[in-house]
Length: 210
Image (tube, rainbow, N blue to C red; front, side):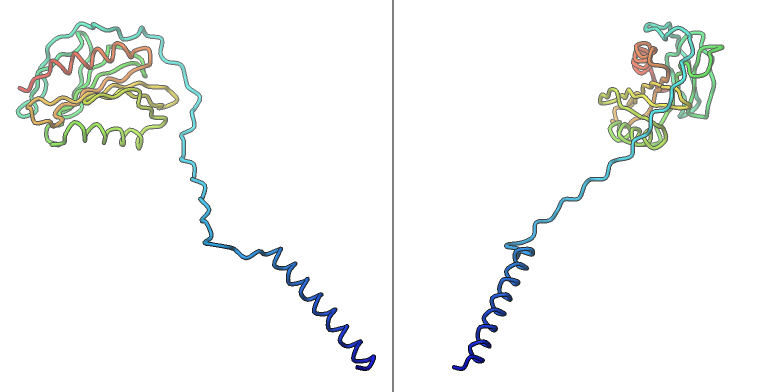
């Protein structure tokens, strides 16, 4: 072999070695994946939360007390006629043919009020009615929080017009059908909780059709 042949052979060896080093360097920067690629879990989007507004003070009227004197009243007519217990001396108003309301006379806004509605025609179970009402509250009101719940009643809070409100709801079955036929609602302030719970329980126990 001549010196030129030897030089050419040496050059080819050098080029081949350099190419091999370059290939190994690329393989190190981009290693071949072994097995299946594992999916990356996406971050769960945060649920929207109602901002808590600056709350205004409640009216300074005395809290609703348990054991409020009640009197028997007859409301409605025909299929909507009911006999129930209502607070003595409270103003009465008829919201519709099957809905009635009582509140203390000369009470300022954001005090306490009682509402009774006959829902006999809805033909829905108490369980269904309670669950649906929670959904409706969360759709219609802001900062709704469920504070207590039984098989036929609900205690909750919400914010309206920058006032913190507490509410009690109870549904009554008067015919043994397991359907909600009467809804009793008392709304007031946090300081009225004890009196509202007592009032809802007593009125609910005293309602009769006819």
